[in-house]
Amino acid sequence: MNSNQPDTQQTTPALADTTAARGLPPRRISVAPMMDWTDRHCRVFHRHITRHTWLYTEMVTTGALIHGDVERHLNFSQAEHPVALQLGGSEPEDLAKSAKLGQQWGYDEINLNCGCPSERVQKGAFGACLMNEPQLVADCVKAMRDAVDIDVTVKHRIGIGRSETYGFVRDFVGTVAEAGCATFIVHARNAILEGLSPKENREIPPLKPEFAYQLKREFPQLEIIINGGIKTLEEIDVHLQQVDGVMLGREAYHNPWLMADFDARYYGDDALPKSRLDVLQAMADYAREQLARYGHGAAAGGGLRLNSITRHMLGLMAGMPGARAFRQTLSDSKKLAAGDPDLLLQAYTRTQARAA
Image (tube, rainbow, N blue to C red; front, side, top):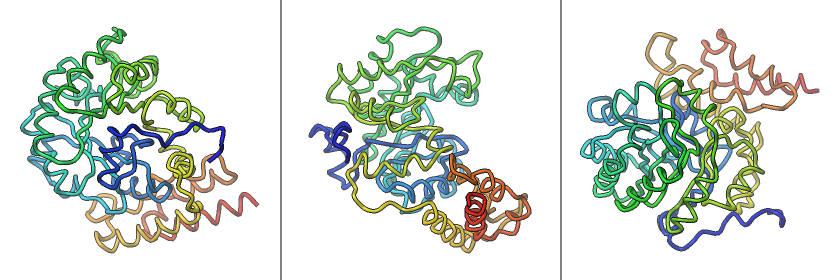
């Protein structure tokens, strides 16, 4: 590790106990739960790039688990560890049942969504709406902690609507911490529940990282992880001087090779990282295994479509010569319909030819 980099491996004993005691890496770096993106195929892809970064599922609602297909929502590869299940809901009993299912399926953490501003989530009275009811969130956390032995964490915004006072998020965190939550993932901008789309909510409300920093100063015993608009290693380094961890969102998805530096830089892992070609070969093998298990399905039929795996990999060559050719190859509908995982290697070969 470069000597002029901040010491990013120190944790207080209290924080280390929550992960190291279970043989897990600290939550120094994580990839955010993102609807329609961070499914199990995406997480396997990310795991081939970084061994220690924490990965999070898409939000899974309690209703989907209690009344739906549990295996479809919770099945994942053992290679994904450490991996957290994010739940959406507001009924303590339902969340406790869902958290217990998550632990039974082998997840390393249960995370409660208190930050999503979408209309669908608002109609269900959970997500960011829950920030207006901190005692209810505390009750939900307590119910889940009583049901499982793994960590229960909360992901939230810094405020609701146009009000931007630090006291709001301070009181929310303080109330929920009293129920035993020790880890808070802070998306450092407000959630505007009326007039802005989920996409606009990720871009228009101003980022206020100083709120997350202040939370860490006021609650030093808590694990505070910052999220929102973080795109570079240099930005991560700055944040890690103030808080315990950094969660990346869309940058990790659109520019996944940024994560290739994480293991050495933030976890002191001296193992030789995989090359892009190594990752593609591993993912081609994974796709073959998945297609053999579930069958090759047509666009409207059953089974598994190759595109459900390859779509997460379009950004692997971002910023490299031939990146456009790589994306074009992996987006070719006729080739994808054939269901041949070697398409990944063909895309790489075409990239190399364009770069020569």
